[in-house]
Amino acid sequence: MAYTQRKQEIINLLKQSNEALSIDVLCNKIYASRSTIRRDLIQMESEGLIIRHFGAVSLTPSSSKENTAVYRGLENTEKKTAIARTASALLHDNMVLFLDS
Image (cartoon, rainbow, N blue to C red; front, side, top):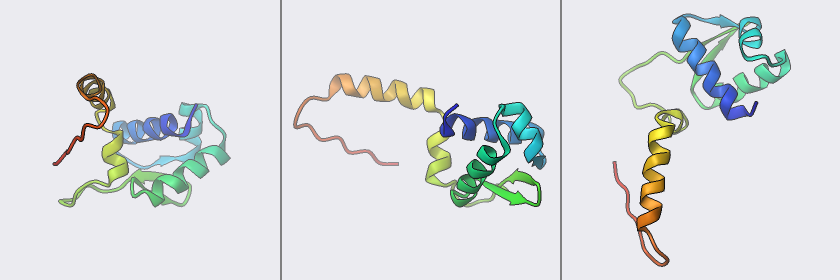
């Protein structure tokens, strides 16, 4: 399983549990080694997605501030892919596309 898939699985598991999960639980649910999960968690913490505790991990508490770009990139991936496919059919060489929030 690739890092992005494991990352999405970890986020989904943490959302479902609504509490901190141990590394052992994540290893058993995702079928990955402790070292792989630990490396993933270190990367996810640097991206601002999670908070690591001694032997456990939890989601970053939601607040009024905007989610990180990495986290937003993981949301609605199917819809974003569909939009990209539709847009690619409409764009041709030397065309410019401007996107805004």
